[in-house]
Image 1 (cartoon, rainbow, N blue to C red):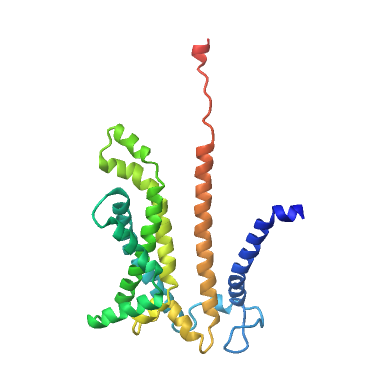
Image 2: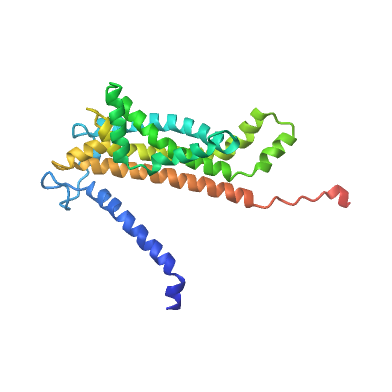
Length: 276
């Protein structure tokens, strides 16, 4: 009982992680399945057909590429704008700063149904044709808030004495930003970009309202679910998960190597000439 009380939090954490990864494990397992009918819901026999012919079903790869393109463009624009907004909110004092901070959180707190319907009404009133452009604009609208919050937290956690030391060494503002500020903020910017891309890639509600005839990967899955999701969808989902896992593990490995390098004590050198 004493051991159980001591490790109760760790046990619950492991159980929660297992619960979260069970659906992913099922998707990965069914990507190697050869179902009897059109519904890939139960295991039948092992097969690599979905992996060797991943674009065999019409619309799977085209919708997947469309989601990738929308995610990349939306992430780049939202990351650029959100980073500048975060710098303005943290480094400068201006009229309406507190109101801007409040407005930044509104897209995060607004239900996606409300945001999607509002953007659809805006585009229809402006007679703007629905398609890839409207989906990109809609994704930027809600991604930018997450970027601002992430980069802002990174900026607020920075030690201002590092920039002050660079200025004391006669570095101009451009050099301070290039060699001190930007390298320190870059992990937060990269984290915000990865978060924004993941939010854009798997968004369904806002995309469904503003896509028109455009079919993204989540919209394709929603439509295919009514007539049977093909095994190729499971294979693509598994591939995306594995790529994301590799990126996360690589980032953790690089961060660990950097921490080890910083924590490693400097070698002690002895001046033999002075000792003699």
